[in-house]
Structure formats: structure tokens, C-alpha cells
Length: 427
Image (cartoon, rainbow, N blue to C red; front, side, top):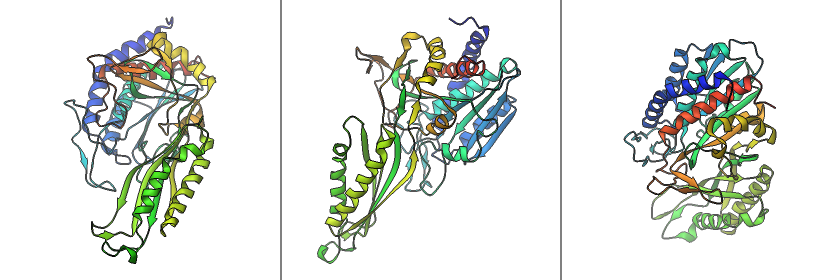
């Protein structure tokens, strides 16, 4: 139990703002926007931050990034950066709620896409808006500065555009003042109100891959007069399934092709086929090896069919690394907020999050917040609660998050910020 009365005040203010946090979350869920298109989301956030009377509200950073600056009324040199991502996904919304998205983006590069917050960024943004409200309410007692960093394009911008965490940092989002800690969280299919943490890589390293296989176009009735790229594509897809055997079995990796583009019609042997995918590595040092082997596989498989292949790696993201020192610094705060029994160590994941750019540069901690109808089994793995909505992973059209848990995220942000500024959560 805390003996500092401000902790109770933070909780009181969080409870007070909880209904508004839910309303923000539902509004954002109804009105999702894809990466680098988050104009309405940014406007909602900036308008709210201005209403709080923050010292600064900076907009238009790396597209639609927003940074609010709250300078406390007590002298102090520490600067906490609280970060949330704001973009949605090209995924149909089948969450089953009455606030489900019906948005279709007809202008986004590629195709018309259904759009939804199937990764929970609506929750992240709403929780941080709530934390800004709470901390602004105690600003005269804050010994330092808080940055509220709302980051667009976490899912990756279109490949012809810049965006995301690295672009925000390149444009000086956190240059004045410079953070002494970064903190954030990601909602996940874990028991409601539980916080998962990991010493080491919480998320893996990632890169987008584009493979263009080129042949020679001809009519489907005379394939010998051209070079069909399709057999080479099939060989590449089959070969990818064996790449895991070419690196250490103790370091998980995965290569997934999620989209294939062809131009032509049913009776034409086309000229090119483009494969889009992602490479994930639990250990960042394996990335160069996996990329080299994937490039060799694609080029040689294409050559075997008299075609050719070019391989490009785009939008690299380093792993989210929680050092032992920062975990030790943050755990007392987390345990105070959610309880010892709800603070659990998790395994590694091959998901990615470019909050890693902030963590790597400024230090800090990134954790998982459970928001689904789940319990932990004897081995510590989440399992569905009987009669609940089940376990649904992020990026699934049926992904859901419990509204009542969002206040826990608000409290985590607020407590961690105060504890860092006062020196109890730092290294």
C-alpha cells in the first residue's frame, strides 16, 4: 500500500475520468484511420490536450503525430514520455459491439480496405488521453515534465511514405525536453487487469520484405514462348517454410508472406508477381542471417525457372528491449497499481512495436495489459473463461477489449509518471 496521498488522488481522478475514456475509445473505434491518415484521431487528441491547458501541444509531427507537454509546478529535472499509438488496420471489424467500425478506405494505396482497430490502438490513445487529464489535475505537485506522445503509423506507413516512431524522433518530437524514461503498454489477450512484463526482448525485431519475381509475358496457350513467374513463386513460398531450419532452433524466427500481387487475367502468363511479407526474429542479431538466406532462396528459386527475383527489405524495426534495471525500477509501481498477483512475467513474442525506437533511445519500460475474458492455467498461459468471449489475438477481425479495464491503463500511466518524476522509478 502506498503512503503517499497523491497516489490516492491519482486513482480518484482516474476513476472520475473513466467514463470519458470509454467514450473516447468507442468514438475512435467507430472512426478508425489507417497509418499516416490519422487526421481525425489527431484532431480529437490535440483538442483535448489543449482543453487541459498544457504548456504546449505540438501537432503535425511525422504526419499526424501529437505531443503534449506538461511542466509540473515543482522543480525537477526528470522527463517522462508516455507513448500511445493511434493508427488502425486494414482489417474487417467483427468484434460484435454496437460501436464496431464500418469504415472503408477507398483511397489507401493497394485496394479499398475495411478499417478497424483490431490491434487495440483505440484503447492506447484513449488511456493516454485519460492519463493526461489525471496528471494535469495534479500538475502543481509534479516535480518535472511529462510528454504525452501520440504516435501515428505504428503499423507501418505505405512503403512510399515516411512515418512512425523513427520519423517522429527525426522530427524532434522528444528533443525539448529530452525524456529520461519512456513508458507504454499494449492491450493483449490476457486476463483483464493483469500486467505482463518480460526482462529482455518483449517484442522481436521486424522488417517488411518485398519480393518481385519477373518472367516473360505470353498467352496462356503458349507458355513455352514466355517465362512463367508462378512456378518460381510457388518454390519460394515452399522454401520459406524451411528457413527456420537454417538458423538456431533456440532463436525463434518467422517469415510470413501476407499478400501476393499479380497483373493480368486468367489466360495470360504474366510478367511479374510481387510478394509482400514480414520477417520476425526473437534475437536481432539473427536478422542479417535470415535476410541473406531469404534473398538467396528467392533469387535461386526464380533462376531455376528461368525467371529472376529482386528482394527488398523495408521499414526495419528493432526489438522492444526491457532491461533488467528498468524492469526492477518499474515493478513496484505496477504491483502497487494492479496487485502482486496480477503482475506476471510473460514469454517472448514475435510481435513487433516501434515503441522500441523510444525505449532504445531514452530507456524505459513497455508492458502488456490484459483486456480479455481469460484466466491463467497452471503453466501461466492464458485460457478462456467459461461463458466469456474467448481469447482473440490482436489483428484478428474478432479482436475485442474490455472497456472496464481501460481505467487500469490510465492509472498505470499516471502512477509510473509520478513515480519516475519523484525518483522512485528510475535507474
